[in-house]
Length: 237
Length: 301
Image (cartoon, rainbow over all chains, first blue to last red; front, side):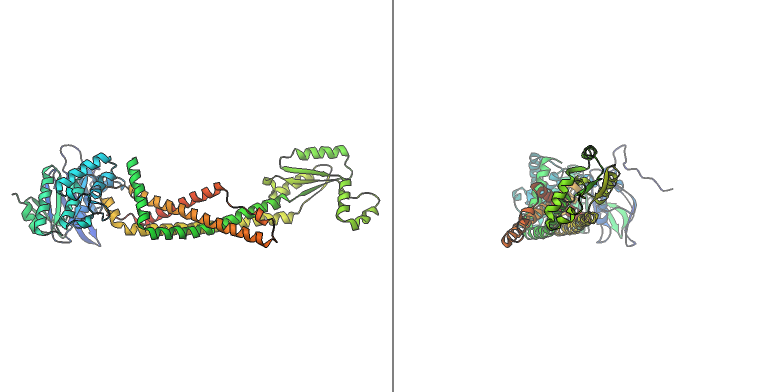
């Protein structure tokens, strides 16, 4: 008899992220194969592995953009695989996302880009102004608030992207190859920023194939290879 | 959805229209031409329907009285007919009046009747039925019912003419509905394609919106509004085009002089119908947008 999985996990202090025997196949090729993984609240995890190892697929599952073929995914105790499509936007409001290609709106100012998640939630103009200013200050680009993304350096664009991801105080921050377009100096800056965000209590998951990032961060490393989890190694500073 | 969100969505819809000015103009004009074709048929339909209505009013039913019926019985029959709710008007023509009319209409033939010694023409009622009783079946049923009244010799009307008229009206209706449906689908497709172009151009933006937790409604509303504006403007422009064509037609008819009176008979849509057509345009625009949004899937993350 198949194991019936609940819609939520209650009781105690639930894990922030839980994957239970998760598999995903594309054209019969396993992008993820029987992955079971727990990430605690407030943890900083590096998801490492070469291109095509399943890192992005795993992150996309956490925001409900992909459904596993087998297994269950829980975020903050909620079974993402059982969410209705109308509930997914509300899950995403709790998760900040940062991408390699920044994904900023080119025709909107830095301020408007960062304000977008708040606007979507119907925040008041006063709240928007306050929170956007805080987020821009936190990432150090407050002085560029009225500029268009095209006028910013790549490092600044990534900072704006981080500001947008943290502006509504997410419980989890997911970053998919956030330093892929950055030089080592900027990589270091962005990773320091993630550490600061993590220090405030946000769970941070960074997917990367860059060994430099691993060396800089010195936190828990989860390795994926051809969709399978490699036994973990913990590196502490 | 709060007022702030509504303002944001309205601003976005307006920005979409402004950013894609050329596409917007092309969409409005193509929609206008398509809806103008619908409009021409609608205008033809309205005018032909009105003309058919006048023709139907002209359909008279003759109810002939038996020559043996007394004056009192004739009055009683008249009373009975007048109380019929199907009746719109009734005119009594006595034997003498019938003879007078015959003589007036055919003066050269009047000697034929004189030779008979007595007036052979019967007294009659000229009846017009109410509009809802002018369909061929209704007329036939009414005539059959009246025929059974004692004292009535014959009920006469031009059945072929009534049938032809009814078929003509039904044909106009069917053609108008057919053309209307086909061209409305065309309008929906045109607007839908315009919106799809916008959606395609903004697919990255839509993906970002999805990513940061925008609901389907939040994403769709600006595009539905855009479709509604395109539809409404297209409809308004088509009405302006039709009005110009209509006025030119009237002027041409007036200038010809031969069809005097026709220009007085043709009518344009009433303000209420114009408003309704703009609302229909809006609806078609929304439908076009909706179809495109459904097909496009609003850019998956």
